Image 1 (cartoon, rainbow, N blue to C red):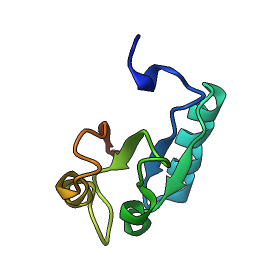
Image 2 (cartoon, rainbow, N blue to C red):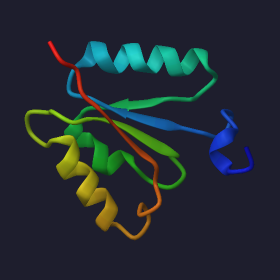
Image 3 (cartoon, one colour):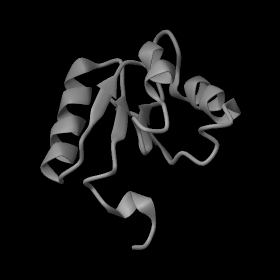
Length: 93
């Protein structure tokens, strides 16, 4: 790949989930793959995403105070994050 997200040494995925166990599990998998992961809950996500901090976002869709769709819409409104890759996740019980 030729894009900047293909280098795991530079990629810093942000894992956003209100469930701490889920965040840790996803983070461990990405860490083993060589990524420097940042994890947060939904309320902190918008403050955590800055250009030098995260290269992509893996976000839970269903969170109690601010859902993934709402948080991503707010991210897209920001001029710095219009091209930020977003991946939605949801856990069914």
